Image 1 (cartoon, each protein chain N blue to C red):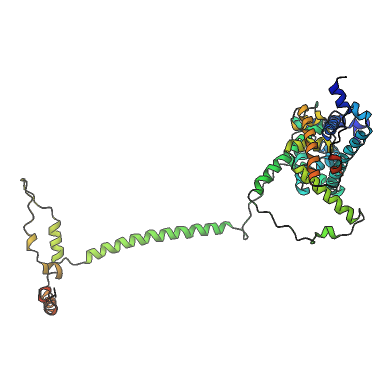
Image 2: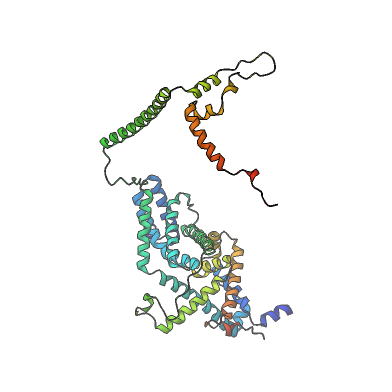
Length: 212
Length: 222
């Protein structure tokens, strides 16, 4: 035996060595022989304490888990597992969409369709009637000078073959009074005199001396 | 008693035989019989599964759900079960993966949630106030305190060390079984177990746990 090995054999074992010994035993399931451990009573006692400590840890951990899972809970768990397994083999259940609280009959369906059709028909009739009314209104309006002038203006202008565009000759003859008052001279005179009096009392900018 | 057990086969072989029988029944469409046979496997592995899930998740309700999910998943995927692997190992792997998924989901969830304030000191749950015929209140208190310290120390271990320690020590699995369950190498399993024990010893000694660690911790040299 070398000097180093002799020194190691006489030296007491550390916790790390105990941990190594114990883990080797635990994982292989075979007892591990250590020469120092078989010779040294002190280390044997310490190793026994070490294994006791680990056993206590195991007992505590298992007791805690068993406390959380008493036999009744395990029985309930097993029943639940069996229910879930049965459910796996059943085909998927289709849940019907919730019905209306009041059953819908076929006559009501017909009535709804009639209401919709009547509303659409009413809309169409209203539009047609509106168009007819406008046309009649246009037809019933008497053709005055403005209408005559407008009709005259809408006639296509005669364009010379030259570059200059020639306006219709009748256009300048339309006076403002005619345009505004519809060509009724009596009516226009009354309105003009009224406007004239308002115009007389209205101050003009040139009459006012503004301070500079 | 199942047929395999009656024939004197060891439990693990009996489990594998039962799993193979259930698989065959499923393939033949005899679902009711398959379920009945599977119920035997459930009864045999339920407690062990509950312990593992509880030690992973530290919450009984969540552990309950994880065990149920794993049992249902194992039944519905029994067609992929290989006979050369013990049923226990195959099932435990499903369970552990489920627990790890739940831990990940919980971590994600807790990132967005503010923890509820704890109940004031002295105000206990109704269930704790009910008289029981078990150990004395003092023993219960000491035991609870010890378990809390142990759980705290375990939670501070890296995930792999914790898994290896729980499977090796609590469930008594060999390194080969732990390797099959966790996907780690056998030698890595031993290293993780060694490190887990060493770290636990240090953590519990730091916490001053009343398990006699402090006195034994000192290094004796001649």
